[in-house]
Image 1 (cartoon, rainbow, N blue to C red):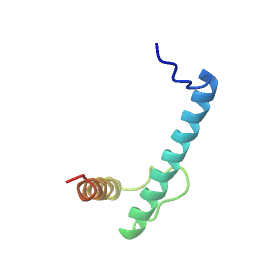
Image 2: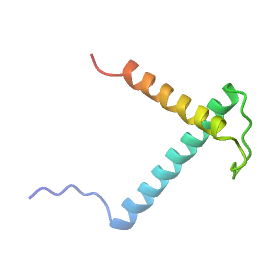
Image 3: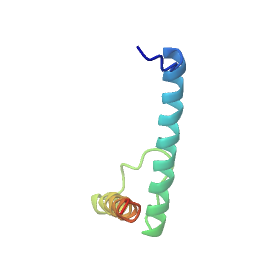
Length: 76
């Protein structure tokens, strides 16, 4: 049986939490960049007062850019 030496469960969990926090921060930065390019101002924290159109425009543009990035970086 192979020994993969993955470290203790607590080490794996803390590494996963750090990775999760980094991904969350990157998506937050991406969202802010997209909102800025669409001239939609976001506040730090809760943005429940923005219109559905504004929120949809941000989310739609994020998806559009992620799909374009994925297609561009696919192995050929």
